[in-house]
Amino acid sequence: MKTQKKNTWAIFWAVLAMLYFFVPMLGTFIFSLRMKRGVLSFQAYQSVLADSRFLESFRYSATMGIITVLVSVLLLLPTVYWIYVKVPWMRPAMDIITILPFVVPVIVLVFGLIRTFGRPPFQLTLTTFGTDILMTAGYVIITMPYMYRAIDVGMRSMDVRTLTEAAQSLGSNWFQVLTQVILPNLRIAVLSGALICFATVMGELILADFLVRPALGSYMAGIGRSKAYEPAALAIISYGLTWVCLGLIQYFSRGSQEQQLTGR
Amino acid sequence: MAQLELTNITKSFGGTIAVQNFNLAIETGEFISFLGPSGCGKTTTLRMVAGFEIPTSGTVTLDGVDLTNLPPNKRNMGMVFQSYALFPNMTAAQNVGYGLKVAGKPKDEIDQRVDEMLELIQMRDFSRRYPNQLSGGQQQRLALARSLAIRPKVLLLDEPLSALDAKIRLELRQEIRRIQRQLGITTIYVTHDQEEAFSLSDRVVVMSRGLIQQVDTPIQIYNHPASDFVAEFVGHINLLPVEVAQAKEGLVRLGSQLIRAGQFEHLNGRPVRLAVRPEELKSGFAEGANNLTGKIESVTYLGAIVRVHVDVDGHLVSLEMFNERSLNIPAVGQPYQINFPVEACWLTNGEKE
Image (cartoon, rainbow over all chains, first blue to last red; front, top):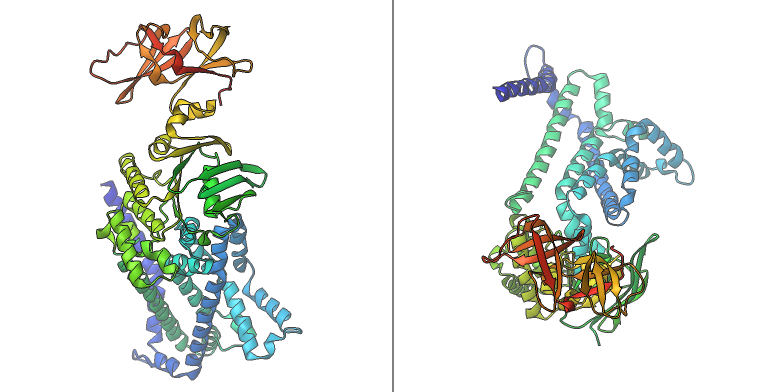
């Protein structure tokens, strides 16, 4: 009896949460179909996809997202690994440092970047390439809490130190340990961190706005200010893209579980 | 010349000395155990041999070559860890072949060696399994095979059986010894379990607080412990506070009862304690032996052995008897007579540690 009652409540809350989540989505979706008066159509979607600025900004943000993920992994993976193996007492300090991007508003970060790197001796903002470097740096900082935590959780789930020592005693150098033993076992953690980083970069607005680069976030904000139905269509598209990314992650992690037959 | 030599090894972490003045020469093919309570420095010493720790001072030499500052991946030593440390992303065969792959050996050679090693541990049928599909015992056997695949000069085992249950532990212990004998590989085995150390080793190094207490064969360590620490750590022992009665006659007094204890020369003042192993004590009276009377304080059944505590003038004396069918198990509170041979006991000065 008691468990039955509990189950009823669980279902009730689950339905409530789903409604909270999906009703606005549904509303946005229906609204996005109403561009043509009186009929439901995909006109808004056509309009969005036909706009060359959308594709351009999408491509730009996706490229930045991939670069950000690569830089983050290259920067954080060896760092976190080193902390686990050699200086574990640094971990609390790292926890605080990696939370800083949440504390410092992005607007402050952008002004800091512009003021520091927009004037001699750096003057990175003079060229688009230089600005893109600043953008990437900014993105890496903004997404650091997610990537750091994903890697940290992955490392925590295995005995990094002993695995390292085992590999070393079998003749591996540091690079081989990292690429052949540690990274393969962190694949799922790194992938999920990468997804969150990528999604964050795709939706980021302030950094691109102030550094005047054609990112998807700026484009969406601009459309939102000037048009009615297209922003709704864009929201649904970006939501769909996020799901595609999630699906990919799911696919890759399942692949590795099948490889291990029982999974972990 | 010994194959592996540790000379004047000292290791301190910050201000704490973990290992002090460690000297040991190990012959080729010898099986050595480091035995001691946790924190005695046995694992630290092993890690210095493996290269995971650098000694604060002293040297490690293998076949006359100084390894002290050589990184672990250049030492050619196989290591087995308590937690198995198998690579979860690799199959059993890939785990065993990993060291050879890193060394850049050709595939055929790797496959052949992996086969050979899996045969050695009788796990050929498991070559395609992942570590998480194997039992603890199988995982540790695999870890052993992996460490041996690279044909190391020395095999290092860091409490390899501690995470396993009692029955598997016993089986694997015998298997480790069989494989070690078969390959004739020099082995260092770290354990806090004296039964393991004794049953496996040619020589045992008993350690305490970073110092070597005794290095000898198991039988010598048990029968002739170099210190009270060794006597107490290895097996059970009665250490009874006695008064010297007649030094010339070799007599001491436990409560009001006289005991003939032999040698007094090595003693340096008081307090004096009498050491005797519980299994040396017998019930009843024996001519020419030391005889004591008391009453039964407690009786504990340990399966094959029955441990009896006898109160002798306020001092608890423990004796162990085989649980034979003919054994007449005494009742608590009953008066009891015990005896032990004069040569089975010795006197010591040391304080109880």
